[in-house]
Length: 447
Image (cartoon, rainbow, N blue to C red; front, side):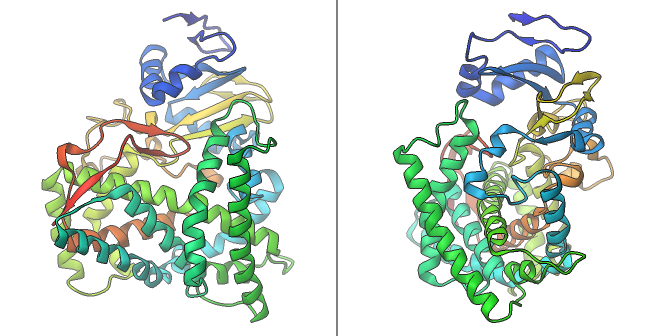
């Protein structure tokens, strides 16, 4: 390797190309290149993204220095900040006191007891998926799991947010306008130079999508406020949220949080479900055991939130899928005050990225780290410090319980009624954007 010199205050790393740094290698195969660098330089190394150096953290202890012990010395990274034009000042993009105020205000709406009441809405949103799988089975056709999981999780998060307040035509607007907005947001986080101010076709399309979604959210919020608020869906809980002085969320703040839940909530759960069904297709022995558990616990009845805790093997499979494929696989941060990470000094303005993918696939902590083995979650031999798929510390994903509730209920219904086989094992590569996805279409036979 063409290695940059290591100093007491600066870890080693490859020199990279002039001007662009290591962007060509990262765009060709980000995960493969980062694994290569970790093997050569260890769990902390420097790389360059265009003009900026980034300290890559692949050690769980150093990761917790950034995310927990010294969290107040870091803010969200530049890529996440670029999402403010799309998401506004919701929890994903907010920092400092605005974030702390919103987090305290919103947190009760995401307690497990509050979310458990949404299980009926999630099950209802899954029924069209079950009907489509039955049609594919009867016709002898394959189904594309990635698209199906995106479809069902979008409907599930819409149902959890709005209950029955979302009209059919508005749901079609959400299904049509959210994907281009999500694609635009992803492209912005990866851009070295921010060209969003230019009136490109992609920018105009994204702004039109955002306006259409704002109109849907605005209509529902206005009607709910006019009726006095209330409701057991997430919007009702957010409308009822009050701080110590009795103040609640303004309409613009509600819009930002709803958009964050739409954009950040459904895609991550969809990729978790896609990888789960893909891995179970590759491991038919585990799949048979999970199906037996689901059928014994559920029978023919509609599942509830209480069933989630009665399905330990399915829970272990979801945990193992999260270990192998953390949806938000890279957590970028920027220092706002002097800090120390893994023994190295970090100055204000320095960029640090916590690499959950490499932490959770480290042979130091996980035997056979690249193998899908749900059994590792059924005993006591766990390593919590090396497992943080939803982040860690105060900024841990607020929607983690909702994501697991959705994923468990949807996968339980699918596995109870169907067996999904992916011919030839499916794609073996991964696409590492803002979220982690399979490197190609995941087509499955339905029986």
